[in-house]
Amino acid sequence: MISVLKSSVKCRKPSRGSVALSVLIFAVFFEFGILAPANAYIDPGTGSYMFSVAITVLCGLGYALKTWWHSLAKAVSNLLHGNRK
Image (cartoon, rainbow, N blue to C red):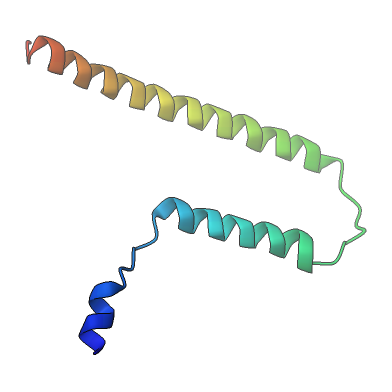
């Protein structure tokens, strides 16, 4: 009887995207739904720190995109034109 049930029920392994989305939804709910407001003072230096972090993230993403684009272009070129040196 159990083998019949196992064969009729097909369980899929969740994709990485659905797991990541579930974690993101939980984190947002936890941040805005459970935690109480702090009513705290934000130091003026925080703005410059956030700006610095944003610039660093943009530069890192730019470098990663550049590296990925060059390797993709090289692979496509080798595929289309053969492996010439």
